[in-house]
Length: 343
Image (tube, rainbow, N blue to C red; front, side, top):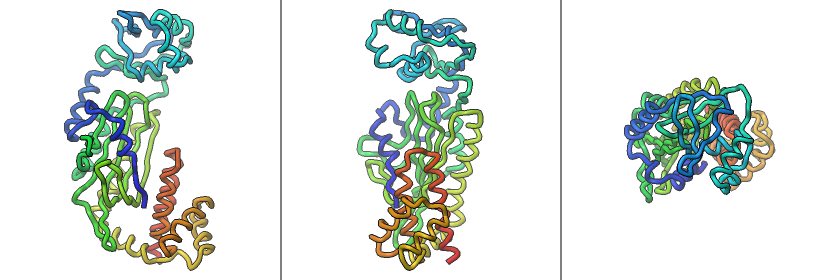
């Protein structure tokens, strides 16, 4: 079983101003941000900053000027191919001249997301925005009984939205099932960024415990999904809906069957020795390095049962750096549980 730490990391990087008590409060905030935000398209050379009261401001073709957030300032520096740290050490007038000499002169427009008198982000033409409010509306539709976990020791709720991104941690406190005397409940993490800070993503799981540090302990059936903010990012909402509906369906319609599968997997051996087990895992396209490590972990549990091996491989997939690779690895591991049905 894996211990999931995404919500734990979010807990320590979020301040009180980014923390929300309820899904309704978070949704209202995101809906307001969308309502007061506007996309503005301008050519790169029109983004030359100007100085007002010692601050760099971006001129808007629709009129007026807008301040930069820390994130949009970082994007402007990347667009100009200059170091943010270097620009921060310059006097405002010198920084303005640096951008004058380095911003590109191309004919491809830049997409500015403005909210009030601030530029929240700058993107090229390939970027497609997915609003946080849209994602929350999808979650609200399909995850009816899910709610944030217990409040963390420092007041963190698992519901966060800041200048750069949004993150939600939700569980179903009524969805517990008993397996071999151990209780599991469904939960998921979901995240998005309206400004390009991170991809759209979801991780669903069944867990045994959440502590006040918001570490999810002993998770099984961990499934990952992510989608970049390109032209088809809105299709990701359908995928997220499908994944959460599958989680709810397991809870509602397959609670007994899921318990039976895990119970059988706890007693069904995949082979009589390590060599036989390794050959069986290789048939399911599990990499050799993962097979070797999984065998060592399962050996400490006393038997090469399907559950012990799935548990070991789930722990290993959490070390995979890239989301796309982790999604593929998780899918292969999840398919191994079906072997318990055939046994």
